[in-house]
Image (cartoon, rainbow, N blue to C red):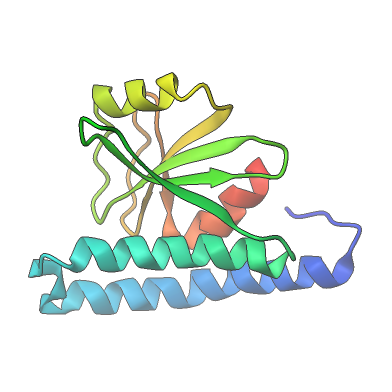
Length: 149
């Protein structure tokens, strides 16, 4: 559970976490019921939703979000690299249905020489974790960021 010396900040973060739990599942259920999942844009919608929530987390605590997209010259991609103030990073892929990272993605992040503290797959769908990658459901996204923060 969140402990904080600034009660007002704790209230904002608790509210944001509760809002995501309450509303994200409804949004995801609505999306699953729509033909948009058959659209080539479905993945982009899910990515935008996840990145928006990560950005809101940092904005709500008064920090500028430092979010990056990583792509190698070989076209290997990582959807989201989240930088924390202490120069720690989370590398995340955002997927409708969780799929393990490829070996090339692991190598790309390893070659970055950054202090990567966690590797995630952010998804609206529940799934067990993979060998070296943790699956983070949308409804638990703020809580997981707080754990890492």
